[in-house]
Length: 121
Picture 1: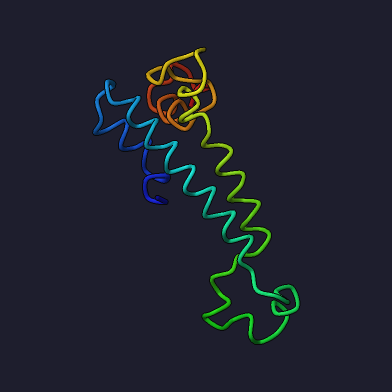
Picture 2: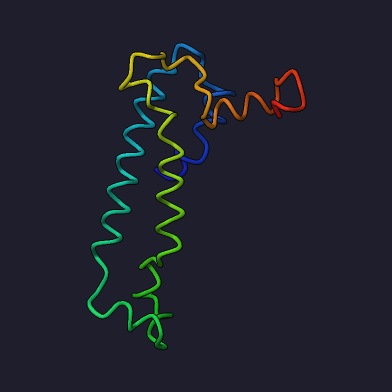
């Protein structure tokens, strides 16, 4: 799921035809849902005494390393929020999945390459 999340824009620009935009949006929505569920699972499976454990030597053991800290939680939540425009077309009639919403990773990529002025890059 993380690989799709990281490279969907590059795949969409380089390999998928415009007719596949709806399918890519559906796949992105499924991947986003899985990542949100995974994040919720990581928050709720922390062991008892996790806060105290972080300040001890045991915090670096392999069994504890997989638990995430607060900074990671905030950054992953922000990342998931910024990814929402990639599949928002499935839930709104304002634009189709082939349109370029103003705030999306795809639009930023296209503007950086095709922008007519330096302000678009």
